[in-house]
Length: 278
Image (cartoon, rainbow, N blue to C red; front, side, top):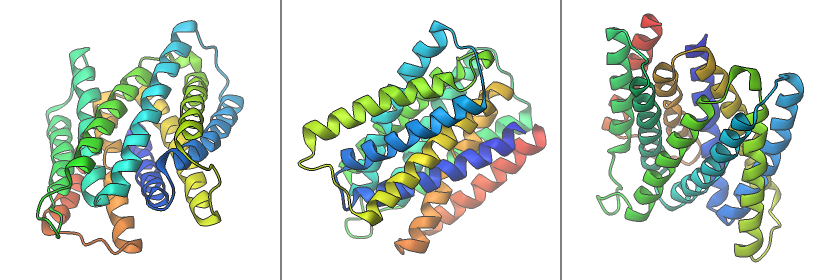
């Protein structure tokens, strides 16, 4: 069940990243982020109403911290996706985001079957292959976009660790706490940085979609890491860039290079190994 949830998480994050990154190419990133997080806050409120829980002060504190890390990570990711090739930025972010929780899980005593371990390594390595594709114009990836991707991955991975440390009994309260912090930070940044907060209908629709998919993916991930090993679930969720790359190919006509195709095939193979072992 946790592996299946991981696949849905990957689809949610990958599609949401594409929408947020696309909107950020036309509208300031902070405005897109603020819009998306306001929508995500409403979604988190619905989840709390549906999944009742009893959160402790520790759970809420972890939620606040995870939300702050997550919204800054999203800002870096959207900016990176707007500045560079989506097929490069998204996979780099995902590989780094996957490595941090996996190392954390193993360091805290989680054990993996041999087949699952091979699958985890293959899935993470697949993200690296997808990210290895060069920019056609310069033959080198854009430095700013790569740095933003590295920052986003580090922050995302840390936020996942924080969410995973919340108790089962807390339900969706940590998620709501995280969204409250995210809205405050995102809206505050938009008020300070952006000249105007209005957003045209196409970009607004993209931002709304990004917010809904972001909170849905985070909620599913929270369920998954509580019900299964974090070292198994996160690499599956890290396959989200495959969806981003496919959407960029279908909508923006970004080319998919040979190494990216090899990476996507390797990702599917790693997912199959993880699922078989689980």
